[in-house]
Length: 225
Image 1 (cartoon, rainbow, N blue to C red):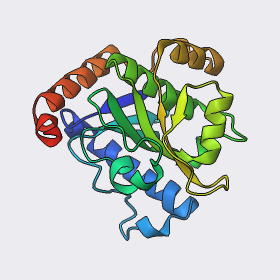
Image 2 (spheres, rainbow, N blue to C red):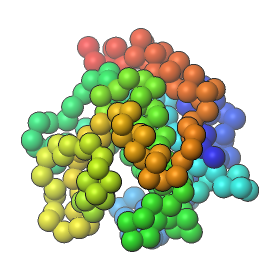
Image 3 (cartoon, helix red, strand yellow):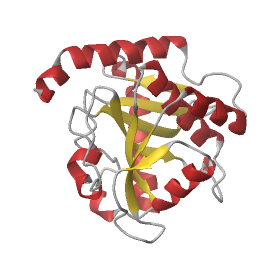
């Protein structure tokens, strides 16, 4: 099951967010070897984990967090704009109230995909991305991903546009991209992944829309000025 967490309901998910931060550290540092972000407390948190962030948490049957991602409005400082702007060298970092930045897409190694075949956790996160974008009428989601994931997305026939050249020609190199969230893309994803219904419930969709309207009516308007 997928749960949506924003600043409005974060107090209800404190233990799940703690699991998420520890899962991110295990996957990104202990497994992927990103030593530059290692923390002594075993929690991976950065400046983009703030009150503008929307989290998706995938829970297993025991209600443990086995996958997550975060969304941030592109009008705010994001991972793409502040850390990876150097690889958005074709058209720069796009900013709009119709764009969000997606980062820290994580699946627990016990349930992660193998050989490019998405797991049920990854499928729920991907479906949630498209449902999120369509609910808000977005043009798309910016992100930074490994080059191999760009290849996978092209294989899945996703509508994805690179924002610059990869920082390395190796498969482990990073590339900035914009994923267009359209109804045909969501239908195709559901058909190929065997998803028969939305992964974001009506209540969480209402929360997403309310949070988006509140942010863009107040704080983000000031940031964009």
